[in-house]
Length: 570
Image (cartoon, rainbow, N blue to C red):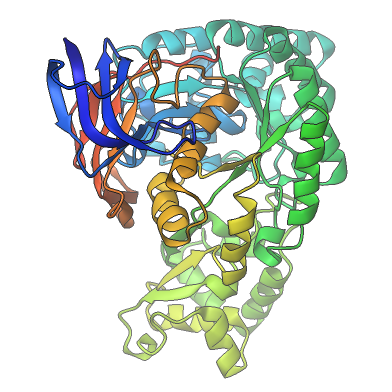
């Protein structure tokens, strides 16, 4: 008798082949049969007539490892069909961590990934080594978890405070390599690292991985190469500005040393904001060159626009790359009001926003929100009602004023409570994305799941991908859209039993209504799991998310099941 029989749906198996009406049977957490299984008994039957039955979504880039210690399900992702998450990205992993360094690790996640410090107080610190962390997860996972070992975590373990002060010695490199080796033996997806200048801790110090030498990176890539499985995830120093020629060569070299896929981010960098089409042809040639050399580099691609609301009273982290504005968002409210009302202060703020920081040695180079996509979301002030819904850049053009002055006047009229909403979407960005996402080395979708409480973390990317790029824009056939979200990322991560609805594979299934599937509501709301406000999207048109044969989300409701497993590259 099967444990679960999903009957009569359009089975889109993740291979890219056309879907076919049939059944899927699961027993002991594995798919044991597909086809037409009439009359076969099962402990539970899900009637899927009119629904699509697809493999569970694989998200190759999340930061759920802290949250998973108290929230098994990661419901901001699993609600949207995600059944496997890759965590420990960007060099930040919750393990290894010495007991004395737990506070440091928590504050690093709080700063870099925008997590709430009080929420991080809920981390169940019952582990120190990477192996010990993985050992704590069985029986406490609602989704499957694959883990990178983070470079910053390992450097901190070996070097203490010196990790964010200097490069390592030869002896320290050997110790760092030994810990990465142990993690690989325990089943790590690979190692992750970052030299990105946006990665700072709460004391404005560069995170430990940024102080590592390129030779140290090469040694760690060779450790992965010893195993020949998994992947390497790395954000080079030029990622924010757009990966330069020397870093492209480095990425190819690291992929060759590891003998595994290398996953990077930031190919377009700042040009994705300033000039969306500027670097794509060059980036495409780089990806093609890496593949031709037998050392393929893959790039994360967020196909869901970034967005988030903020008030000047509440502040935002989006201006870290403009030091004067970042300071404005953190001084007392009376001082904010004074600065916005003072002509000399305003002049300095205008100059600062027109000349954001581009020097990593001077701090974060995060590009600020751009005026063409900054709109006035809401305001209670009568004088502002004519601006609500308008774009700051457009309003400024109409009145012949600097956009910063328009924004400040609107804020002051509402005692700094007017809500502004930023996004990175423009018509040019959207049109270019139709082409970019088709490249076979772009990992379409992905999120920053578990991070960034002050904005949409993109965890709903899978339903957005289906609703926007399959159904609305018709960039993909359904079967290929599903493959891009399941089998492809599973293969890049080295997961040999996920991403397909085939006999012997894990029983991870996503069932949805093809006519209705959509992001649904996406707004800042109180998260009962985290106990803080955060963006959360509640989708529509989703019947069930199934992990290892057990339903973890059914029609938008958590079931409480915890069938998730630690998944390891094969």
